[in-house]
Structures are given as C-alpha cells and as structure tokens.
Length: 64
Image (cartoon, rainbow, N blue to C red):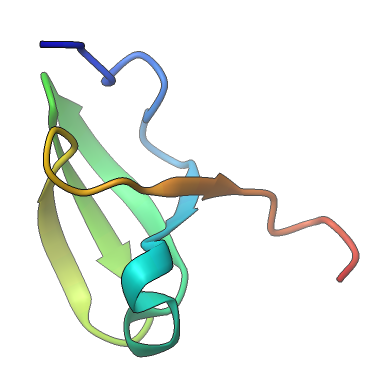
C-alpha cells in the first residue's frame, strides 16, 4: 500500500475528477496515512481514503 500523505499535505487544493462539478474545489485540512480530510466548496468536509478515491492536485492561481 502506497502512502500518499507526503504528497497530499494541508493547504493544497484538490478536486475529485469524478465529482468535480458536484463537490467543487477542496482544500486539504489534514493528512494521516492514506486518509485526508478535505473541505470542499460545495459539500463541506469529507474524509477521503486515497487508496479508493483518486484526487487531482490543482493550482488555483493558474490562468484558465
């Protein structure tokens, strides 16, 4: 089992590609092993198991 907590650290912005429109952009609040807590703009806080859900890190400052 890979440990993604070193990549997904608090403060980083992410999206769930499968629920991008529903959940919106999220900011990581905490990261312990493969479980992270993310505060999403449309659905609030979610605890994500990175072994089961693939999140994408995004740059909110990038021009779209």
